[in-house]
Length: 438
Image 1 (cartoon, rainbow, N blue to C red):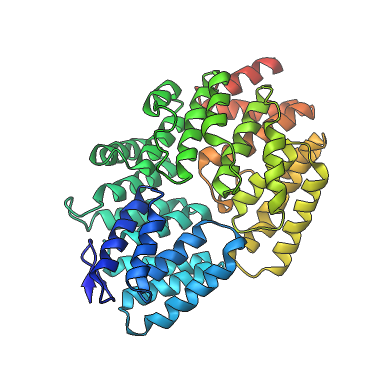
Image 2: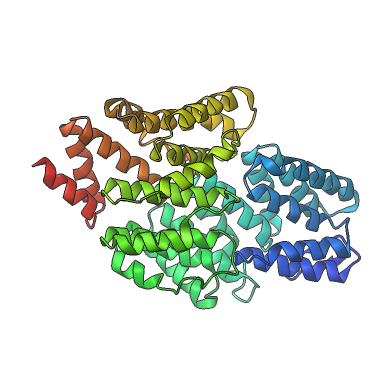
């Protein structure tokens, strides 16, 4: 029996396995590419290391693709077989891994929540709870769980700043921007490699319309985060949003081409970033060249790969934005099969929300703007369970407004634009469209 860097008992006879696990954890918290190698090193030192096996399973699940299903099942089976002599906390991690692998996201979060009751310093459980809580759209939990943990840790606890950053993001998604910014900046002062906390502050600046401050906050040279995983591209997406709001479209396209565009592995977050950014550019009339087609070519390779509801809406956007109507129809049919046949949390959300959004996006692409409005307007306040942030989900509101204007529903369009100006006074996008209605 050893203890990890956070003082938690771990079941292994190998000190090397624990040391590699500790490195993997902090690499994970900083989104470093080296995390995978550290997990491999931990399991090379002890192939039956329960927490190492859980970590590998968690890594595979975070890829959010069914392409790794066989590897996931093998890893889960190994973890379950090795868990007989493990601690109660470790066994709960195995249970969380099993629930997540089966698509039972709420159950996985409950297991991590149980772990954190007695082991608030378990930053792996906290980060994963935060991650999946976010993709479930449970805003209050994004704030409350980190608050519970932070209040029971000493500032000297390793990783304290990461907890501040998670609390910052939770406050932001709950609309408490003052608290969010304070915690986020504190976390970055503790560790300027903390991308999640940098990102949390960027969200505050975005929601408050502080676009110039946002460009300054994220003012970094291209390639600065090359040692990080694809989350870095999402931070660049935020940088592009600030430039978009400021009307610097050349900068947006430059950021897209250098940091945002989707790679050949078609990672889900890259598709989210690219599709919504191209759609935002389209809404302000920017010619994006063949970028839509390049994205759609990649999306078409994953028509039946459904894991995250919000991701599915963005995959659909990648197809509709490129005008790939037949592929979009095939994607919609695939979503319907998934909702009917799968028995997990994502399938439930898909039936209620993903499919209506996808149908509206298809109608929009086909020029049936009235149908797009009829699809989006009734559910525009009900989209939270799709997952994603306020900033990410805002693209649906923008499409709804544009569709209302194109459908000649001037009263609705004006109402939505006035609402947007009151809530986002710095929105030049809303101001420009209001002017066209007068």
